[in-house]
Image 1: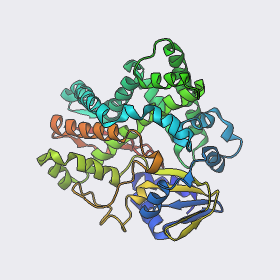
Image 2: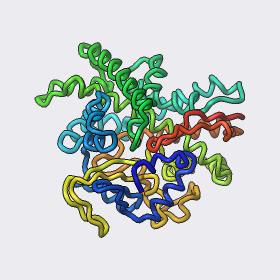
Image 3: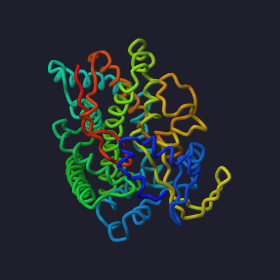
Length: 396
């Protein structure tokens, strides 16, 4: 298995083929002298929780794209995000915003999601058809994160398009045109949030941008570009992953009518259905780590400096943990889904993501009970990571 194989177009349509291949080749696969790939649930979970498997983002960029491209502003900007940092810098930045994603703070956001979701459906319900991705799944989370950042919702479409172009950068490899688009998208987001931060310096509030600005009064001051990078991260994380997961969940359920009918008969199954859809077809397919020292895990030795590609999608389909992993079972009670990662980098906004997905599914089941996807019109986004669709036509 080589890195470029993870980008095979056939896996966009059927990732189960990749999962099977990874499981057949073993729990820890050597892709090159200093690259290893794992789709084993036991190894992926262990490494996610092992601080010796940390982050070295720029080195992973050099590995994938070369030394010259690693100096591009888009990569240097991402390198300032707490997502790619190790302790103590990671904890300092993550700690600033943890309280905004606590259980207490999620309830009003759940209610906001219900209001916004119903308003979106109101706009197209009389038509009898829509593109669910563009008219519901993508605008819903982006409006939520806009409110959390205190941004005008009118800016959401442009910012959302830029985020969609930028996240291609998290694939193992990328074409030159897509890299150019990602760089332009980062510039768009960088310039927008730079101007926003400057304008808000004299008028801070309780929003997430203000949290970072407030930290500048600490002895360990955040620089302007650090704040920009991490606001960009929050915008992307609060938008792209959830939007794609809503679409993936809809397709998974409607492709499994028996499970869908169970859900229609008993909406208390919605939280379990969301958990199973996350396992079955996660938007986040892989995470990167670097061995910061020698690691022995599950009887395997990993040398210091090894770059690790942890395939969450395959780990969530590991037959050693999940019986009949290619079957959707919304009442499944086995194994731990790894779609939100683990350890110190476990997804900060997982409670919000779950709330948004649960509310979105509830709205669709109640407001559009006869909805059916037009499978022939579905267009995959053809990403190895942040898997989802760009178009999801439905009728009712």
